Image 1: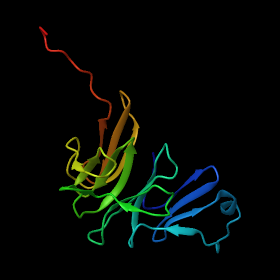
Image 2 (image 1 turned 180 degrees about the vertical axis):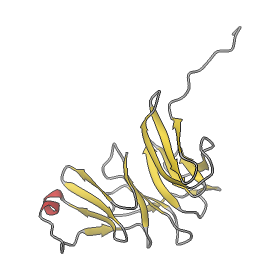
Image 3 (image 1 turned 135 degrees about the vertical axis):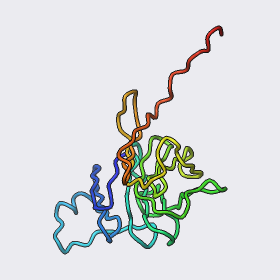
Image 4 (image 1 turned 30 degrees about the vertical axis):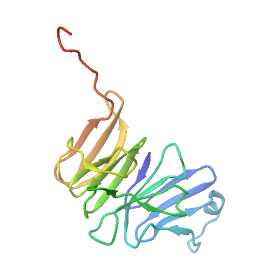
Length: 183
């Protein structure tokens, strides 16, 4: 999963280009149009809801799957997913009492069907692609501005970058099972 922050970013895949711009939503254009773009070129724009997109992440295995977050209070759901390259969006803040509260969500990343969101109350995790969320107890309950899945000591790890409590890492690989003595 490759993610971009609220300052902006771009992602190129064969045949297309994506850009995230401050106050301009999620911009998309075919690569051939991007190479000929000028300052006055208008790109197609997609936005799940009104407001400021705080981060965008792309699924590593499916280029049509995009996640977007909003870092504000109120205004609607804070976590969104598109399965059709931004043509339509679905809110995935959770349900059945297992949801992200109405708080800013600053960043999102994924490891398979697991999603991780950096929020004003720490890291939230979903094991079912956003249907249910719960606070991840491996991290402090502080503003988490960025979450990233990258190589850890034993395999993939989640890195969380907080406001005031530094950077944290949690290994995502299951720990080895130990047998009790005498069994």
